[in-house]
Length: 341
Image: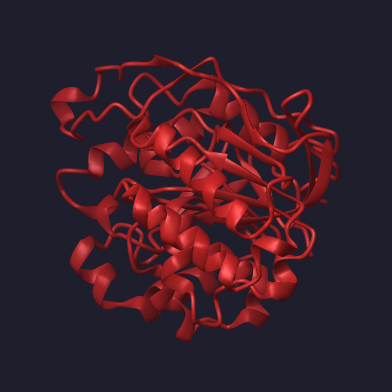
């Protein structure tokens, strides 16, 4: 896997709408500017490309234009990294217009989550490390400022030598819904006490390269060239989290079972599951995971639950394609190599 250059204060990050065009909507633009300002306060120069603020309709109707924005950001020597403005439901439409050689020959950090899973898979196909982490409109536009926990993980993984970086576990979390109305811009979201890491099964220490993302999006990619190959799962640590669509426990179970039938769960060294949004189906998902893994005689496969990534905040920045370690006995999660060059 090729690794992008380490970020530093003063670098330029391109904000791109590769999924939804919400950032450019008139009633949301204040939120975009808030996120841009808070990234600027961290020392970055934020720039837009043609479709970043084009709005929902234009972004939806121009997947080729979105792919061109990604190409432009990668080829521009003045741009050092790329961050998704937000997720969506159909960024995989970009794939037919994408030149993987441009991704491969111009490795730069791409950061985002949720529907950005599709974009991450494009980087994985190109053999380039990408980062499952915060987006501009949600995390960096947080009222009252981006959470220190989110910023610290972002900095540790993208701006420092992250080899042997042990991810901290947050004390509090939120997915409290607060409408993105400008009247709410100074209102802070409610925080809840976090349950911390939970071992569902397995023991000891396992290692592997990080793979995965949003379960809902991976399901969308199955049968396409964007779905990870069986070889990609081999000896991997699978990251899985669910979206704001709150997949029913039965559907969650079906998706896991399908992965077992495909033979990819059997290739893994371990699984790390993110906290579901609003903690909905928090216990039900645990039951489904243990049930399905038992069906495939995988009762000893290490599974750590309630990870700090996905559709809750604050969150980690996770380098896909980088080797990491899960220690079930001590409930720790650590990178074994640096994520950047």
